[in-house]
Length: 161
Ligand SMILES: [Zn+2]
Image (cartoon, rainbow, N blue to C red; front, side, top):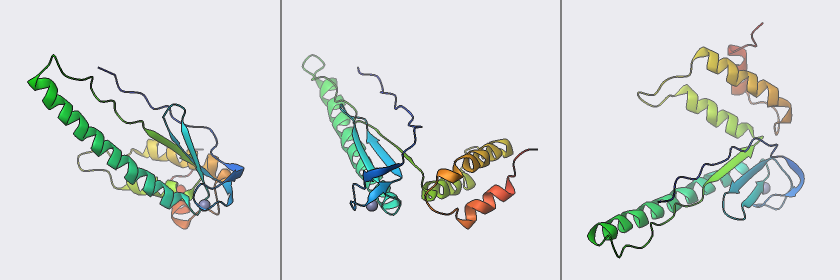
């Protein structure tokens, strides 16, 4: 059986001032989404389109994963009934990764860590300070001015002396 494919983390700068947004056609993109097919499918988005584009991609990925789970369940059924004649296991769908310089993503992330899932560990103050440091380090590359709630978060987690 095929093992899980590891998804490379995309840390490179997603900004491309010369590229056109795949959604509205505007020049100047701040986000990139990559579907890990062979060859990879690379999509670029401007700051205005990225939040919506991201939702659409996530929704599409959920559908694809749902279909894949069903295909796998069907395959398990068949291979249980007749192990000799079973076809090869269906492959899992290619994953996505994305990178952006969008405050939307930072705010989404901050909301997420502010409400840890039930039973899940809350971020420690050291982790929060680390996140604040990362936000400070990339603030200059971000699309548009820093939103007030992000400023507040940084004020609550000042750089260590
Ligand atoms: Zn756009």
